[in-house]
Image 1 (tube, rainbow, N blue to C red):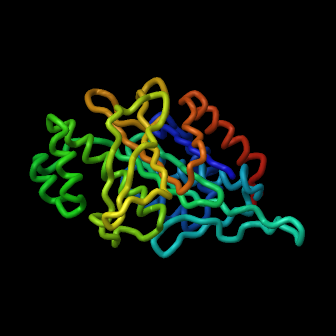
Image 2 (image 1 turned 60 degrees about the vertical axis):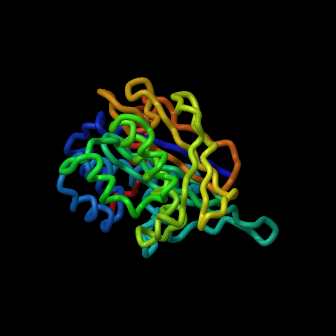
Image 3 (image 1 turned 30 degrees about the vertical axis):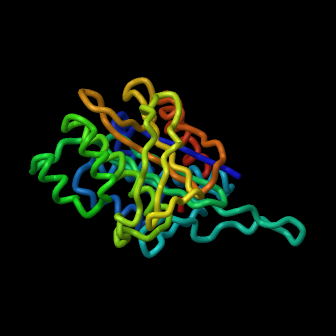
Amino acid sequence: MGSVRWAFRCGTWTPSRSEWLFAARCVQREEKDRIGQFVFARDAKSAMAGRLLLRKLVHDRVGIPWSEIRLDRSPRGKPYLAAPLKVGTDSVPEPPSWSFNLSHQGEYAVLAAEQGMQVGVDIMKITMPGSSSVPEFFRIMTRQFTAYEWSVIQSSGLEHQQLAAFYRHWALKESFIKAIGTGLGFNLQRVEFHLPPEPLSQKCALRQTKMLLDEEEEGDWVFEIIFAGCLATSHLQQGFGKQLRTTCPFLKNSCLKPKYFPKCETITILLLLLFVEMISHFNYR
């Protein structure tokens, strides 16, 4: 079974006009139209990077040429491979299909993929509420968390520490509903997360988070929460202060050992290779 975790720091990507136009030719028209609807260029750039990472995954792991990749979305917006190649035979069954998910916010775009299992990913940049105080922001979001989760969030310390705990819980819930593909219509109070006491680390992901669904513990899901220094690596992180602050949990219904995000130098090389491969494999029409 395959497992992929990729992240790209879009804030350091400054494509030329010709590179951007070329990237736009490598995605489907509806994807390009959706990217063109973003108001801010940084959001369009993050969305484009995510779509290119997704196509690189399909090309590398499924073996479909760049020009033949066709992606679609479920009614709730989750991307999937519309017409995977038939590689099985009567004696050799087809390999399990890939599930993948994207998220982008702030300077980062992230991709998580699993073969034969459902996967969801979410990344949150931890910021102060723009138009309200922290207590008022929490009041507005009251119905999204259980009483136990609010007790954990509001007992985390100072306001910035409470916000860090809030976004950590929020990203966990987002990653779960993205994995199951239900969308925001899902009642988030049905799921309750119990976080491990260990602090987040730059070197490995925490996988001890437990989830209760309708007050019963679900043991089939594994949640991975990754923290990293904003300059040393491109792991997506949680923290507070002058550094870029993000929290990014991944989940998959398997206990397989995950592959963590590579170093930021590798991500930069990945983007360069990405364009090289597009030039090599994309069929101009």
